[in-house]
Length: 283
Image 1 (cartoon, rainbow, N blue to C red):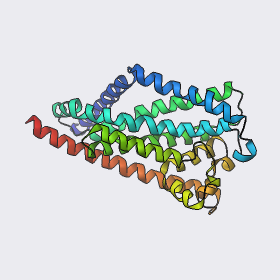
Image 2: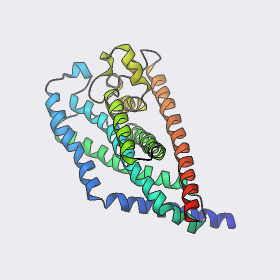
Image 3: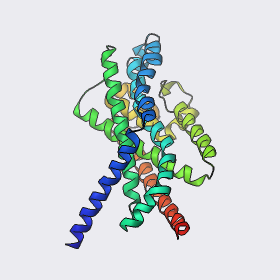
Image 4: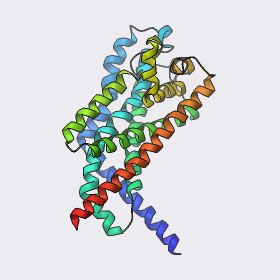
């Protein structure tokens, strides 16, 4: 009986945290304007312009479709990692007091709730990209239950990596501006060597090693595999023309899932350490 009550209370607390994160995020007009307008900006400028230059024979799809599938991962990178600083401040200033009142250790629930919120925003962006591509007359996207489900799982994984990475970086650097510069540098490198805007098959082999290491390039290739097809995914280039297509897909998932898991667990450890420090201050 006590275990059942404990589970019910944990479930209620978890949804309370999700609701709080949802309300804090979706009542910010800046977030809504910036992150829901971005797909229109990218596709109607860069997408349409280069769509007339780059031929499908090079990309195995139109550039509009090629860019759109990359943007799905890009939004899952930018929003969580930058907003993790706000989450860390919120945790240290408000959530810790809430934990003390309830008597529960809910760091994992707090991280998971924010990951789900940013995943929801990225999924909305994904739907926006599909809608815009359809409006612009692009028919290169593959729509099926498996492709949509696979893309959703990818968004969840990449959002977890981005959010937890941001929590860890911001917790290690005391000055927020210094952490922002570091995160901006990390994002720039990840974007340049991710294959969002160009086919990685034309890169020198030593640069493709950098591309291979990045979990975001793995996710972009998987997203293109599900939404465009194997040739456009460049999984063969990413894995240096080794293994068959199915093995490449499995290996890419086996590469990014452990990274997401380790960062998730470590971010929880970081929050628990931060909580211990703040509780010492409250006492």
